[in-house]
Image 1: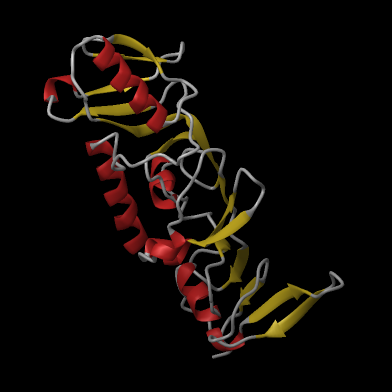
Image 2: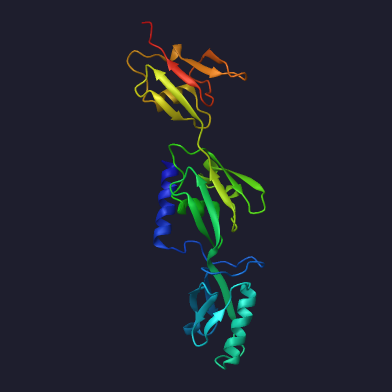
Length: 264
């Protein structure tokens, strides 16, 4: 329920504002590209302040000066160009202009695996893991693992503890860059058969005990007993072994839990 509330909140925030991440300064080496949305602020001249998307030809349109080619420029270089255009056109004298990137549409982040909407998403200003996962529809609660992997554009990797992320741990909410890839793997599974209400395959959650597994499968039938539970598990050689287990024992991936009938 806690995880569901977090995703509902994230989804609501996205619906209210497409630019849910506040605009922030682009990295110094970031070059503007087609599709990027930039916020141009002309201090002291609010009528000239505008938001413009870089066209496929690499230009933005600004009040009074019209089309300005900015593709391939850093935000600092774009600011300098706009200052020259407004000054040379004698529209402003010594203007102070700020260019911030609101949407990095020319930079994409891939989200793969067990999420609602796998695909590529534009990097937004101050984009982070939680924002991008929310855009991708959140993780699939019934099948997603509890850890995700970020593969950076340079090939380096980082692991994200999803449970800690959804609990609000800022260390897990890493900043993302164009070309990064997030992969949410499938969670390991286990099986429950015998005297339970809903036999079948279930997601193996962290620290899943035999008692929790029985609860997840709907509980015992009127004839079932936890005291005679056994687990079938493959050893290192791949041979299946059978073990007696108690309610506090931890399950492992691909375990088969069998609940027997009570003798009384």
